[in-house]
Image (cartoon, rainbow, N blue to C red; front, side, top):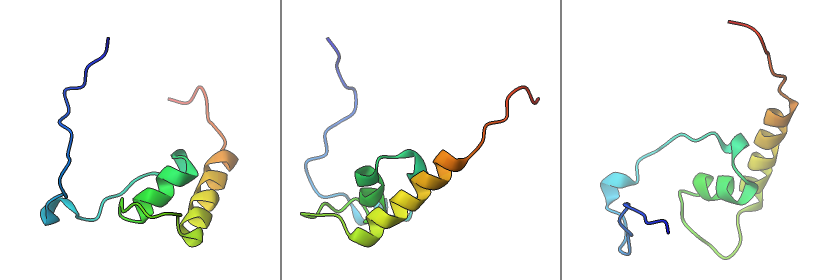
Length: 71
Protein backbone atom coordinates (compact mmCIF):
# COMPACT_ATOMS: atom_id res chain seq x y z
CA UNK A 1 0.00 0.00 0.00
CA UNK A 2 1.48 3.34 -1.00
CA UNK A 3 0.64 6.63 0.59
CA UNK A 4 1.49 10.14 -0.47
CA UNK A 5 2.87 12.72 1.89
CA UNK A 6 2.14 15.54 -0.53
CA UNK A 7 -0.97 17.56 0.21
CA UNK A 8 -3.68 17.72 -2.44
CA UNK A 9 -4.24 21.26 -3.71
CA UNK A 10 -7.91 21.71 -4.38
CA UNK A 11 -7.93 25.50 -4.49
CA UNK A 12 -6.34 27.83 -7.04
CA UNK A 13 -2.62 28.34 -6.61
CA UNK A 14 -1.54 31.66 -5.13
CA UNK A 15 -0.20 34.19 -7.63
CA UNK A 16 3.33 34.07 -6.17
CA UNK A 17 3.53 30.39 -7.11
CA UNK A 18 2.85 31.11 -10.79
CA UNK A 19 6.33 32.32 -11.61
CA UNK A 20 8.25 31.30 -14.72
CA UNK A 21 9.92 27.93 -14.44
CA UNK A 22 12.14 25.81 -16.64
CA UNK A 23 11.58 22.23 -17.63
CA UNK A 24 13.22 19.86 -20.04
CA UNK A 25 10.24 19.36 -22.34
CA UNK A 26 12.20 17.05 -24.61
CA UNK A 27 12.08 14.40 -21.90
CA UNK A 28 8.36 14.78 -21.20
CA UNK A 29 5.44 13.34 -23.13
CA UNK A 30 4.00 15.72 -25.71
CA UNK A 31 0.86 16.32 -23.66
CA UNK A 32 2.80 16.99 -20.44
CA UNK A 33 5.23 19.29 -22.27
CA UNK A 34 2.37 21.23 -23.83
CA UNK A 35 0.81 21.59 -20.39
CA UNK A 36 4.07 23.04 -19.04
CA UNK A 37 4.31 25.50 -21.93
CA UNK A 38 0.69 26.56 -21.35
CA UNK A 39 1.48 27.44 -17.75
CA UNK A 40 -0.20 24.29 -16.38
CA UNK A 41 -3.62 25.64 -17.46
CA UNK A 42 -5.79 22.78 -18.65
CA UNK A 43 -7.90 23.39 -21.75
CA UNK A 44 -10.04 21.06 -23.84
CA UNK A 45 -7.27 20.55 -26.38
CA UNK A 46 -3.61 21.61 -26.33
CA UNK A 47 -2.41 24.42 -28.58
CA UNK A 48 -1.00 22.89 -31.80
CA UNK A 49 2.00 25.27 -31.58
CA UNK A 50 2.80 23.92 -28.11
CA UNK A 51 2.60 20.34 -29.37
CA UNK A 52 4.88 21.20 -32.31
CA UNK A 53 7.43 22.71 -29.90
CA UNK A 54 7.32 19.53 -27.82
CA UNK A 55 7.72 17.35 -30.92
CA UNK A 56 10.82 19.32 -31.97
CA UNK A 57 12.29 19.07 -28.47
CA UNK A 58 11.66 15.32 -28.31
CA UNK A 59 13.23 14.87 -31.76
CA UNK A 60 16.31 16.79 -30.61
CA UNK A 61 16.62 14.52 -27.57
CA UNK A 62 16.20 11.41 -29.73
CA UNK A 63 18.94 12.62 -32.09
CA UNK A 64 21.47 13.04 -29.29
CA UNK A 65 24.34 10.63 -29.06
CA UNK A 66 25.57 9.24 -25.78
CA UNK A 67 29.17 9.33 -24.68
CA UNK A 68 30.22 6.37 -22.58
CA UNK A 69 33.44 5.84 -20.77
CA UNK A 70 34.47 9.49 -20.52
CA UNK A 71 35.33 10.77 -17.11
